[in-house]
Image (tube, rainbow, N blue to C red; front, side, top):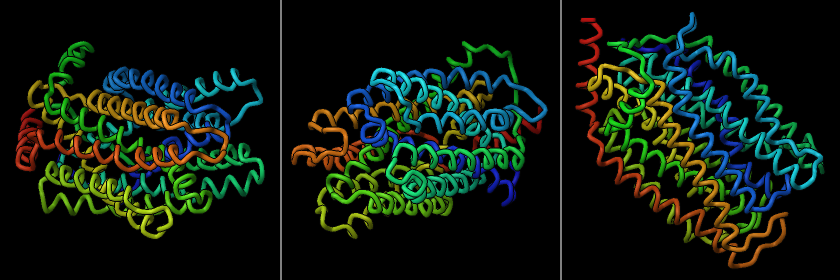
Length: 449
């Protein structure tokens, strides 16, 4: 159904990603630093945790996709997961940012267990949420608009984390940073529950598959991998998220040890990044009205690469220049996010036309699988590079070699990843004309069925 969604429904839907991003932003920007400098783990252990847990978690994504595609309830396929799992998800986020009174080995086991639980619940709530956007409307332009609202709210959620969590941790914990982080995350967790419930109450599932067909899990999995457009999308998401996670993971180290001005400056740096992202998310919709979505994505990749590489040349004393550059990095990089998830719906349409089977949940889950693997590789690679460059945990002074390594990993490595992403996306054949044609064909098929 090519429904024109109301402002209220778009905002309600977008609040679900704001809720999820309270945790996602904390993990990307703060968890590595929390683990090494507050929790007390060495960088090698953190590398192992990120790699093992995130890859294990990524494997569960397709299973969750198969589950949600087969779910039927009076609330729909996808919305019930938001209703029933938002509280466990919130609790798990607090547990991750809690420092237990245990031995070194006990703390390592605790970190593995709580982080694995958080990622499992992230999967169980976010795959249904990501799938929900594909079934609220079949209109390609409305999907871009819906995802623009979504990522404005998501990035605003990230802004709330970057501006509030660190000051809130100082306020609530005082000299006890561990307790401060725990209490700050309790506040974020409570807010996320409220927002997930609003999202559940505000949205409606409308798009139904043209042909249901026999529900065979093996055939469904094979159908996803036979979709050549998903293979390109999945690869692009993997490389892009790996690059973004490297940059996000290194941000706190870049400010604390290259700029040598943590605390307030770190909060301002991350907040400027997020403000740029909010504006970028809002600009994605008007951008795609003026040029092909695929070509827009390619252009944004190359601009992001240029800006990230240019940051390498800025001296640590030029704080204003660093902040301005990071604003534009956030703006152009985050402008890609609505394009990714609206393209995911286009890829689902493409597969439905080819195979007479609509697999919103599986397409979403395999795309999130790529995202999670990128998150795992990016986080693990960033912390691995810290060990390569001789990083010493515990907030001690770092050598010049370590600081130079932090600068390189934060700026140049993501730039290379952005360029490769752009090349992959350019190979996709889902241009604006193709997307409009397949949307019209599906409308006609649904009308005839």
